[in-house]
Length: 474
Image 1 (cartoon, one colour):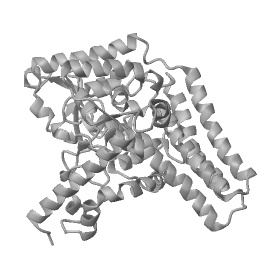
Image 2: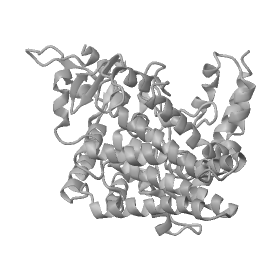
Image 3: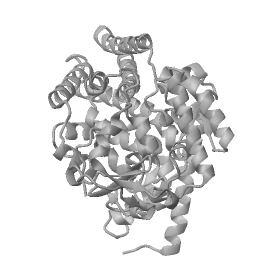
Image 4: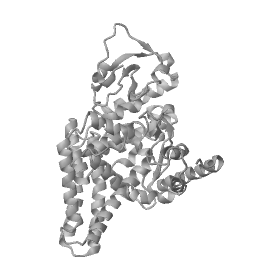
């Protein structure tokens, strides 16, 4: 095996491997992946440039997610891991499925030829400058005003600035803007570490995994093929299977507290969103300063690879806390109570503004077991929801507020495509879905929120019935 990313010995003849054999290698220490019907042994390759995301497709076909994430020519790096070819007749794909896959790969090629992957630098200059105006207004309002209501309004404005900074960091770190990836990384450190207090490395590890396997449950306890954004237990359960896992989290014992949380999770949804930023800041700080990691995947990445920009990340996070402390204290004029109130308003509003958007993107949509996932296109489309205008929210507001993620389906299919081209891409994606009979879902901010709450309620009701049927385990 290619343990630790070591080169696999050169073969004199091509080894033929069945699909059933590929499916046996699903854990990070025994990981085989398939790209264009070629099999690669990437076992223990924690030094993979993109991090642990490589293990999300262990025992599966990574052809399309590889194309979505990588620049042309990146597949050359995989040559040393090559161990053989898949026997095509053993793969679970009929002629219709092969034609469908060819169709969406042709669509991606069409988007490249149309220039949809080329970014408009002036658009991003405008977005960056206009967002800094939000920051300047919030900072200046605290300095020049003596009115408490104005101060709290500035805290809300900075919370909105944090949210919009999140969308900019997202664009740069998906390499939508610059061809040279280091430029996107540096811009991501500015908008992520310095302006929000988030670690770029933490974000990449978590977000890349989410993109690769949205709404998937891990296939086994040792696999890393599940969506990290679904790791919300014991606070929120997005499927009955996830709700039932609470006993595993409690060493097989019943937990009245967890049962209470799951039964009432729809009531706790918004309070949890308000506190989300505190959790993200905590996990970012720990990862950046080597104080722990939120997942085994991230822990291994830090142990074997470390931070890509260790000094830059840490300095920018500390500078973030410096300016955030300064404004939260009213530059030394606020009392402790008012300083805490200011900090909580800007922090909780940001958590809500961010989470309400990407929560609508996936929460309440289809979930799958990783070992029973559909193909790339169907997985991305059926687990994702687009956001439209409606219920008093004009489309122009939705476009600005959601920062491109109103086209969440289209973004998940083509993550490195600049946000200003998503609207044009959307029409092509919608047409392709209709042509092939793939379910494509949209809702406005209000409808989508009610769909999420209804889904949480349904999971709670299923859980209660299951618990009553099985009885508590003591």
